[in-house]
Image 1 (cartoon, one colour):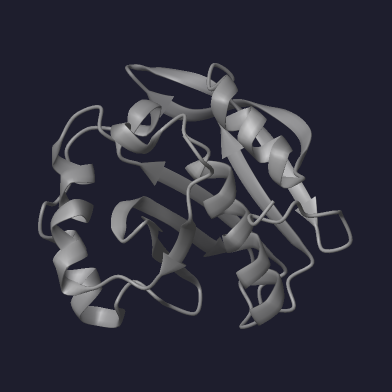
Image 2 (image 1 turned 180 degrees about the vertical axis):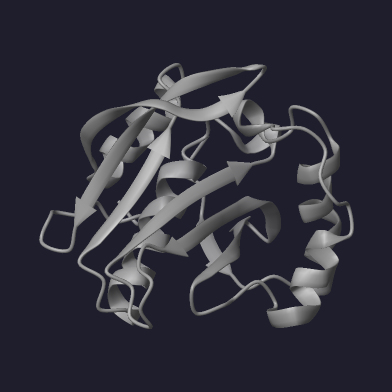
Length: 176
């Protein structure tokens, strides 16, 4: 398969149904499933600000005109100007393992460094999610730490892996 043409875009009303799937379908979000949550929350958030807020937001990952999932960002500061961003990604199963994830995360990093003065972008993942670790490293992230007991999932506290990308680090372009 040739390299997919990946782009990010704001959510539309049609995307709300996909966002709802991530909160009502067990396992769709992969290891990040934490149980059912409010199925109307995605519609309320979309109505509030289209999922594009100054402190957090989500953008759709689109591949050849089709919504493949979303990337998210959250400010890491209590002031009006974020000192760093924390990012994440969730792709629908049919888009995983096809080079979409690292490209989408690279685009998001380019976007955040271009449109904010933040010095750093962080991303966390699960120790067993080797594919995501490779994707982050492909973008240019550096593994910084194992965060012990970082999240409660599947009835127990589990470790996480923290990655960081500084504004001055080389960023692999999504167009490569």
